[in-house]
Length: 132
Image 1: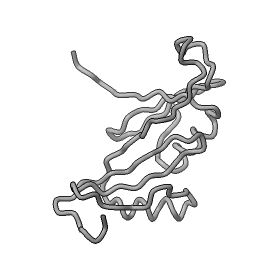
Image 2: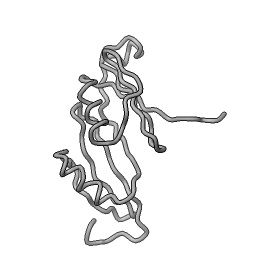
Image 3: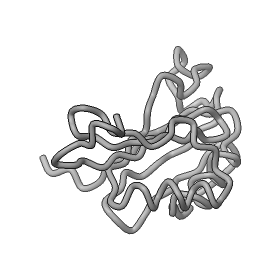
Image 4: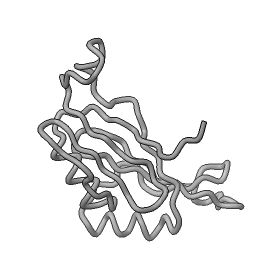
């Protein structure tokens, strides 16, 4: 088997709000859209995103009313401090400020209008103990 792409499907209340968030702030581009549906992608290796409105019949019956909660959409990036600064200047609320974990992971989080947590990660070789 060869996997040619990866996509995460998120069930949200307001597809248009999440679509605007991902296209405006995270560089995604709409590939297809219809009522209660949007398919987003990027030119780089990032995961594609499909947004589905809660209740959509394409979802299994026992999952139609669920929401994309308890999920963290994580992107490994470079120059994470600059990325946090850029998002702040775009008035995106930083819901977890930039920090460094003891195992060498630098990260921060934002939350989209539907409550989807988006985490940005950069791995460092020697964590700064004063930043943890």
